[in-house]
Length: 244
Image 1 (cartoon, rainbow, N blue to C red):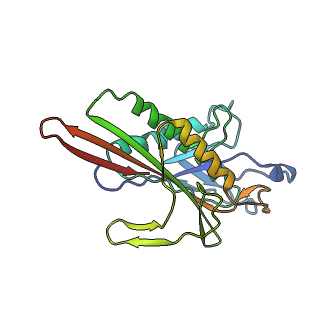
Image 2: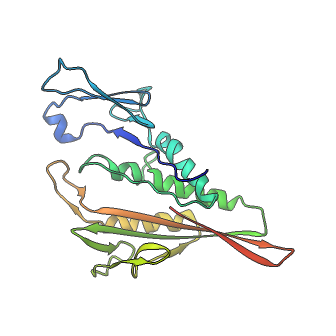
Image 3: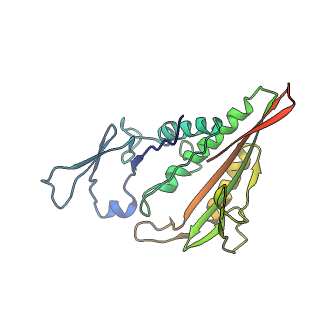
């Protein structure tokens, strides 16, 4: 991979309870990579179409052949991120959308079968690949942090008892960072799953017009993946670090 690569995906979720009660109609249509929007007030007008790297139709049920599951989204987006992380590149997914759009579900998902989001699936695959390593000169370490930004305050979700707002600093070489943010070492997927669950429970939740239990904060989950290789000839160690 040479240079930075950016891919854009859109996803349409099923109607929520509020929308079903209002007999809402879906104005989004997807075909391949194309997403079309129809103006409900001007139905005679031609739909406006936009092309993305991925257009995920998740509005219907899994029985629909066009339905995009959590596994499909991860396969398209998460697997390539994991590959780049092993190559030593920094990777990032930015989930954007209005309240109730399905950001938390796509990224974190639920603990039910086949409902896990991109992050837990990626972490599970990460440790599966680490455990399959047979190179005695190569070792791995994984550290995670989890924070939320709400009302211009930064909270450490892995230290929920602390109510202090953390400060964002600027390092002259490494760039912006959050001072005193917890960075915890994990050795298996169970460790990381427990930390994710702890952080998700600590997130700020409030009722909105769109969603009765909406995550009202911006959350950032970070994985620092370090690969350490020993050169038997020179007896030197080299490190390759990727952040995601």
